[in-house]
Amino acid sequence: MAKDILHGIAVSPGIAIGKAHFMSRQGFVPAMRQYIAGERVDAEVNRLLAAFQTVAAELEHARSLVPDDFAEHTAVLTSHLMICRDPKLIKSAAARIKTQKIRAEWALDQSLSEISKTFESIDDEYIRERIQDVHMVVDRVMARLIGEKARESEPGEKIILLAHDISPADAIELSLARIISFVTQEGGKASHTGILARGQHIPALVGVIGLDGRVPDGALLVVDAIKGFLLVEPDESELNMYTDLAVRFEQYHQEIRRQCMLPACTTDGLIMNVLANIEDETGASVIRGNGGEGVGLYRTEYGFMNRSSLPSEEELYQEYKRAVMDLTPQEVTFRTLDVGAEKLMEQQKEQYEANPALGLRGIRYCLQHQALFKRQMRAILRAGMHGAVALMFPMISSVEELDHALDILSDARRELDDAGIAYARELPVGVMIEVPSAVILSKPLADKVDFFSIGTNDLVQYLLGIDRTNPHVASLYQPLHPAVLRSLKHTVDAAHQAGIEVCVCGEMANDPYCIPVLLGLQVDALSVPPEAIPGVKDVIRHFAFNDCLELVRQLLRTSRTSRINRMVCEFVYARIPEKLAFHLPFDGVSD
Ligand code: PEP
Ligand code: MG
Image (cartoon, rainbow, N blue to C red; front, top):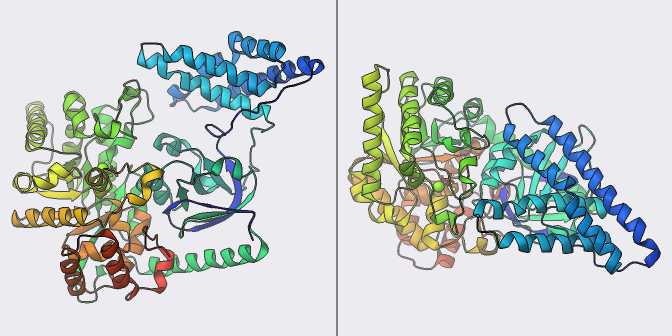
């Protein structure tokens, strides 16, 4: 038996066997609270000073490694160095060691609490938030005090990366070559960590409660990102079993990859378009290699994150043009900037929002920053000269919002005309349906656009009121909830009545249990992470379209999620039982 088993949410399928490597102990380690003998005081103060010095040296070293085009990281590291060298913090902790005769960890913890209280009373939101930087430095010093070294893994050693959380920005910065799996304590099913892990084809677990303390750094781990758990120090028989499962998982993937260039055709002849979701232009070769038939969702916001200045029109145009030319004759659908919530640009980080998922995100941000919005539209329109391009707006929640965005698009066209710059005149324009009000208004919206793309990640979140990133409510995030199914049906019907097509680009499109439901709802295309395309095509090939239509007819008469899940489960098991072991199960069906 393994020494410990921790449960989590599997967000990117696969099996990984390797050594645990904590990205940092940030957010994990509570201070050790102990008194010391009087004669130990000087040694304890020296221990504190040595830890601060070690961290300062580490920060100096990290700063020297920052690439030239990441100036903002240099600035952050410089401010951390200043905090680390600030004599006030060190003196305050050292004084506590001397007067209270306590361990350095406890003294430092008390000093941190005192500073935090001072920060809490500061009016200026930006300065108040800077306490996070003090916490980061103190966490690092704490880690050195408890004897944790800045462990560099051996070159070539494969590691399982453990972290409190990995933000989209962190994930972009990580050197992924040595990482064979991600495991985080935070995060839910539709978090961007999962999306990025799937994009990299790395097994990942999120929402692993109890990661702190229960997993020693360097421990041998098995990550089962199919069923959703983590084995700490597995025994020999477990190790053999998982090594075997990892091999079979690999074989299955090789088999579906061999067939991925063929169309996804149901057993009764319906061909479903399977498109790709990408975050940058480098996805093109991966899409082709996996049998993708175009890009259904280009998440353009990633090109605006992790940089101190915003990209120019020319820079955006060159990026989009490369993507379009690489993929031609396939179509690339660019989603306009969808920043906000967990995807923040540097320029947004200073603005505090109590409920960011309900805040200034997606189209709302763009309508308040029209110059930036128009800059991006012009780049997309111009890229349309080099191949098939479509454009869509995220988070539309009213007809006025769409009208407003379309007006700005007309302005962008007019400006290009006036300047004599070539652009695609017949570029299809769509909206994402991901807010309940857009579902209800899908008829009038459909009359104004050329296509719909349903963002089920957000639609489920907003329809059910479940934060897609919160592990505590992850089991309530039910994509087959009757309200979701009825919303999808309403949207698809409205679109088809208006003569336009509907794509689903949320993670539902990549779920083997949801795929027959989407087929039966008669959506026209699915858009999924490039690495998922072979698996999605394979799943589609096991169903008859007519059976899916009948399934959906029955599901729409049902008003309980549990019953719907059971019906879908039976339907899927009857058709592809043996393969399901290699796909992600959804809650309630996994056992
Ligand atoms: C969605 O909400 O389903 C979607 C595809 O957009 P994102 O995941 O980028 O919010
Ligand atoms: Mg969305």
